[in-house]
Length: 246
Image (cartoon, rainbow, N blue to C red; front, side):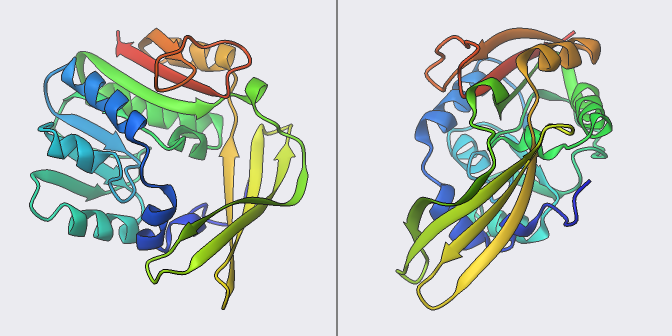
């Protein structure tokens, strides 16, 4: 389906944080949700712990799981004095004796599960590891509210790296409509070097998502357009789903 591991974006965890950290409204959303269902919380595809660690600092008992050893090593370094557990595992095959009151994915990580079977395996993992009536939450980009056109290299933004360099970020996109998969190539211009990374993300529309969740043991309680809990509409750029294990 793709000619790479889909992990090229995650080889430089320190600069990854500098580029993507600071989504305070998102952290607050998941914190409030965790507090509404007291107990231990599991974040799948947790990366460097950008969300795991704020929840842990707020008093939530956290476990974070990710497939990238590099991202987890930095997560453990940042969480040195916190009571948070990080584990290296594939979310599709993760096994634990624990049962969690809430499980979530964020950073649009749901879109990294590229095939029907990948999505089914993920949902099977979540359902198995949730306590009865536990919460499952995640967000994904809405295909109806996203520009899926093929695009040549376009400026996307910039960030300041760990050495103080201004890094200009640009990229291309190419959408495979038959597979519902967007192929992004990200270019970062560091001034003294230029790096390239590839990532593929699957787009699942709201109707398909609702059917998928229902058929795998979840009741969709809420779907939002943003972290302020604006009700989802067909043109929303995101689908933030809050579900309950049946």
